[in-house]
Image (cartoon, rainbow, N blue to C red; front, side):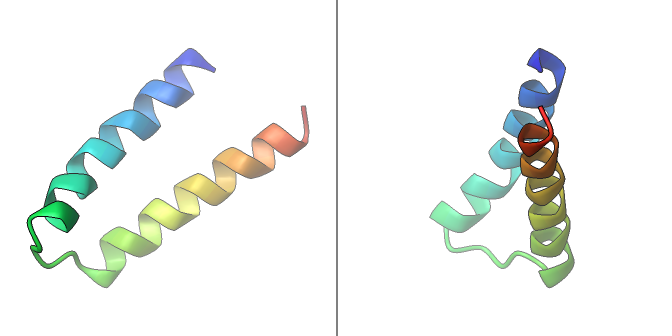
Length: 47
């Protein structure tokens, strides 16, 4: 769980500054982030 949380924190830290500063984020970046979160929550539901 610790490694998984660390991975999500790293990905989030890359996306958040772009959002806060109003920079463009590609649709692909957002899609991949959502897929990772979905996978994470699916794993949590099976525990």
